[in-house]
Length: 205
Image (cartoon, rainbow, N blue to C red; front, side, top):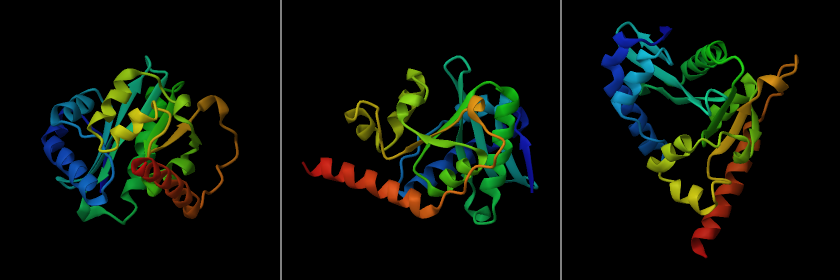
């Protein structure tokens, strides 16, 4: 298995990357913003993505997005092909893309919005902290990207203050020398249950 910084030569995998992301969203029933192959190719050409390959077979992918003139960056589109799940590949990809982000944008705050417990745990291990959406980028182009998510109506009716996603932030100016505390899975489950109950209640009103 090889995890490398993607380049133009990897554009042949753009279609399968987009298909894998879309299928994962359908299986999990969660809101994952769709991306077009052309968009993925641009990320590869700009050196803002990493790809995992098993020989010439696609195994996983993730890319960097910069917002607010580089003040914020996000590691987006993290996906692992079904044939390579449950072997720790997502964690390896996340570590590589995070390191690459810190190298390319050393002063930027790295943020994430996700519904996935596994991603939350990975983020925590890297030093992310749960935050309110107001602490994330106010770049309209980022939030417009949420329009293809099935939960976009939740985001709009709360005036972009909260959604089923959890906001997480790595702030390079606030990092200590200590390792981040391990966050238990049941804490995140409880957080998700609270949010889901809140929005289900609003739907019934």
